[in-house]
Image 1 (cartoon, rainbow over the protein chains, first blue to last red):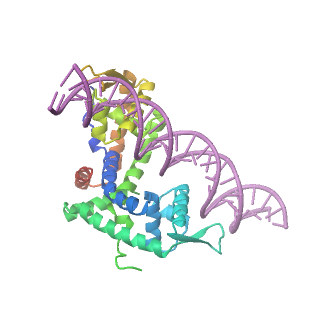
Image 2 (image 1 turned 120 degrees about the vertical axis):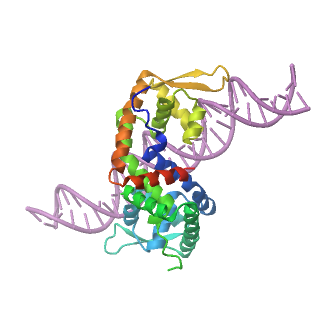
Image 3 (image 1 turned 30 degrees about the vertical axis):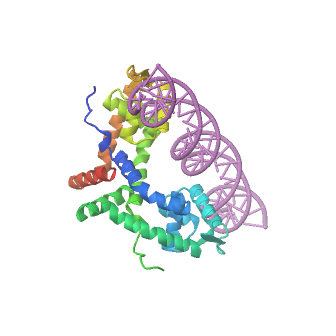
Length: 143
Length: 143
DNA sequence: AGGTAATAGTTGATTTTGTAACTAACAACC
DNA sequence: GGTTGTTAGTTACAAAATCAACTATTACCT
């Protein structure tokens, strides 16, 4: 057909990464979706606040590379569900300090534990050294 | 805060995969978006037909794990742009044999070459053995 | 053959995302 | 101290993804 047809989508890195990401997210997604009615961005926001404590929407967006409108909507939903509280930063009243409520923290801990087990299960069939390589390259690819 | 706070999102595999996938897709996305006004699904459909020849929508969906409605709409757009033709399978008139036109094939070849270079560039900073490990584990994670 | 179930693909309604424009608060500069 | 430029976050509108229901055709089953 053409000269370079040894190129296969199955080995194209962005494609592989997408397929692996999707496949490996499905089962975990069910947890935050079914148990808490959350979307991925909401879970990520929840996670950041649970893990790192009080933060602003901007800080979360930067760390997780989520666009500010997405963060804004996720924060809104989490606030509606009383998973977090917002209070104006007195030094800069444009931004808000976000903090998990007890309910939010409980959800975080629950999901974090699930995530931890899930992660272990994902790599359980692999050689430990290979997994280390995998994570190292993924971290670099993520920039 | 809680007992298992050594767990970090940065090392949660589904998260890492998503971040790496997104980051590594951006630059390539620009090509099929700017040059051909395509969406990711369209590029994938185009790719499958270019690489593997005549196929049905169903086959593409199965191989690439894309939902049939997404495939259907992608095929529709590619047909509108005269990148592919559809003809009823005479053995089973529910399905259609899809085939790239000359224009579609040209676009495929162009993008395939870009993809190939892009892939090489992505891994250029890594050790070849590590890259082999990466692809091997990704293939298994993708299921 | 006739009826029921399954399949390929499409369409429509709803949800989610992306983009751009907006408000409110701060900063900097003259 | 007022004008101009930034920044945090929200809102409105357009694009795209998801999910359910639909059509047309084929398969199965008795």
